[in-house]
Image 1 (cartoon, rainbow, N blue to C red):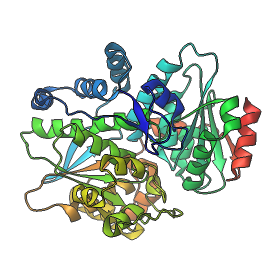
Image 2 (image 1 turned 45 degrees about the vertical axis):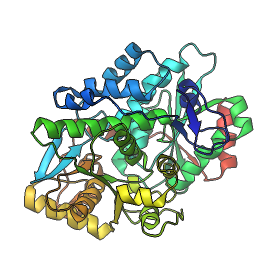
Image 3 (image 1 turned 180 degrees about the vertical axis):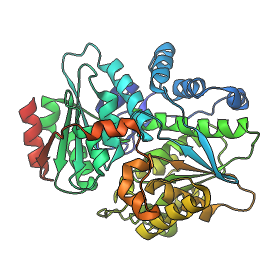
Image 4 (image 1 turned 135 degrees about the vertical axis):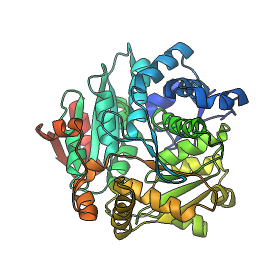
Length: 432
């Protein structure tokens, strides 16, 4: 199997090239040429499989060109933690994706990609440079996933003043092969700079470049593992209904991974994309028109994306049919006030502390479920990362885990840059 560009101009390539390039030469995103249904025996035995066992089977189906034993090893090494399903109230479950090293859902994709890139880059004669734009948790997950991986240097581009203090500390204090570039602009500026770098002839002649955003197929596909784990845990509790799943959505990598899981035969009744004020996808669902625009800053900062890259992949999955997309996916918009009110309400009723992104997903799920439905919302980051917002909602912050306290005491190391591509290009060429 090969991987093709969503722009359909560049030729299809093997997995090794799709992963090490990140973005296709024509500016498109790579997709697998086929997404095959997994055998029914796999799904019938899902409740009895561990997170690792199920994920290894999925990885072998989605990643062609890597020996099965190596994929099994990479997957097992990635999944050193679980993603527990917690019943918040009857019929409504939180899939907690924040039990990895940086307490964010992106740990799985980042760790898997670091190990896969390390496999492909081993023995190369030139260092591989990873460029990643972050609106919060991607930067910390990628930086920690790639820390001290031989032959790879990571540049994290993040919008100055627009990520939480804890998130910033997780990727600006590591040093070694991790460099934080503090951009005077928004996340969309950071993403634009990364995409521009991938198609710049001078940079690509001087450096080996790839991405660790969900732009990269190796970051995106492992996020499908969560969905199998969620259904597995429902079935182990005797619940065979196909769930409604709500995903807090920014760059739409997590939702796209869920849609791919559904294409393999995983039973999911319906998807809900929870937006904050950056609601270009909801607008598309309602009107059929896609109008990307500058993002605005909200309390759910990882969702502050005005031009989601993975929209192109969603179009590919559905042959650009608006009717087909709208049949499988609905959406909801959440204001900052909605986020605070939802965190407060759920805490007062249940004692469960939502993070701002989980609050968007919970509220959208409750608004989209029908009588008799079982619902799962993705809780994507530990609430302690958003202490000020949680305190505004419930009067105090969430308990801070020790691994977060540790990074707060380290010295910040970042390099300020403008949002001009010329400045980024000059900086990167000077590092070569």
